Image (cartoon, rainbow, N blue to C red; front, side, top):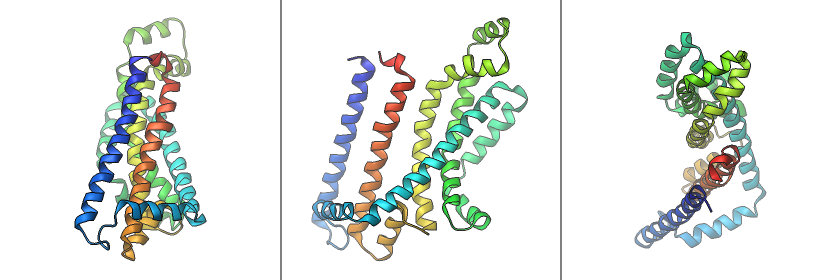
Length: 256
């Protein structure tokens, strides 16, 4: 097993240990607080099992994953394109980077009222908010990586008669892929938080965020903690299993 593979296993174990520690402190808090304020861990797992047998839970989970996939996927594609353009064209590099830095300082959830007015209630405003959350770190990481591409590689490609499209495919894109993967993982965290927050505010149809908000509205603390548990564990699984597997495939030469 290579050093990188060992590090990957250690990272997954760290997540398991972290979840166990969080559950422990949750249970300790439940021992000292009333049940209506802090349910204990077994009660949450019983509720979770009930939710697994409820079609509404799976409908909400499916809706959330669809919105996440559409928003996050669009952001990654657009972030790569804009990042490559900004990194390779000197005329737009500085103003584009400045615009990205300014706009990414605005919390994604702040865009929800605007998009609700412009687009109405539906999936589209949530998807756009998710895309905004993921776009900026992706574009910025690709742009920074593009700027650092070795000049000798660019010069060699030009001497060999490479077109602009070939330069992007054969020189720039392979060089920025490691930074892109890192940026995409950071972007996922932003996209996930934007998704849950937007669903809590919009809440027009089933979703993880709406389920959490509804539990809070009716003071169902067991439901609140169960939803928080699902949101946290699912995010860790997507990041450490799905995204890490994609990372290993794209950067398999580093894991030999």
